[in-house]
Image 1 (spheres, helix red, strand yellow):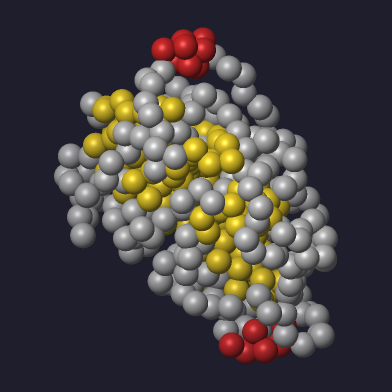
Image 2 (cartoon, rainbow, N blue to C red; image 1 turned 90 degrees about the horizontal axis):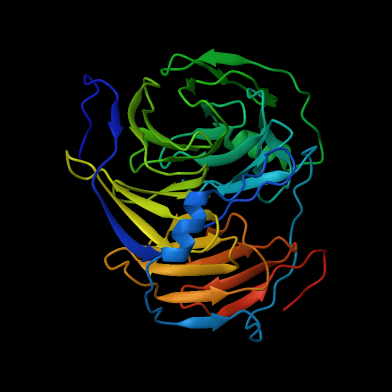
Length: 371
């Protein structure tokens, strides 16, 4: 695995770019985050964008093939929930990021909050579990990202699976990372990060771990993405080139590849596998790209305010493998380990598709089953 030289000064990565036709995604946050207008650059680009053939166009109105049923509701945040993550270490926990300035870790089976992180002073916009340690990275409207301890013991899971509420008492121990960590059972609130990642001048809208968990990528409304050393908290590289606010970022599960999405209607693929970093720019969406995700099968899925979701092959991204046309703008989508795409819409629907673009179903808005 390529390791970056931590002794070198921070790099501003602005490489020669290959412009390809592609579709980025949109992340749309209505309440606390201000909306950006369409620039002259966007208008000119939309008028002169590259035209390519899409291999497959799929309608969103075909009958669903599976039935969805609400199994558990996780209730406790005091404002909108922007992001949800599942533990990558096969622990029975999930995490949520909220506009109420907190991130919560929940027991999947009990539905109870096991740990709350309250160290941010702004909306918590994204949350991601470390691939192999009990750590979480969160991105916030306070212009920072935080790395914090999220160790959940079997005893905590047993305690919280009962009807008893935690007493809210706190106990902290020193961690190898130099920070304060949550201690024994009953430590329900954590307020101090292990590392605070600074350097952005505007909202940090998303953050993710690179493979191995030694580096973190962040995306910001200041139009840049930063690569950090997760141990020291130092900025390794600043990725510049987007012409509007960034809306999302995602790292490949096994390779040192990162994608960033922007309101400038593009998404970019950044390659850190070689000493000389490269970047490719993908056009194709006609409006803001709200999110972009890698799958485990070397695919990229992008969603946009232009009411489309597109599936791409990382090895040949000149045209999408499938284009899903929808009746509403797309918010921050997610792809499961089973390659199911969950597409949340402005109209409050959440629809499920496979990577071939076939509609599988939609999630119910209440406790009833729905197709």
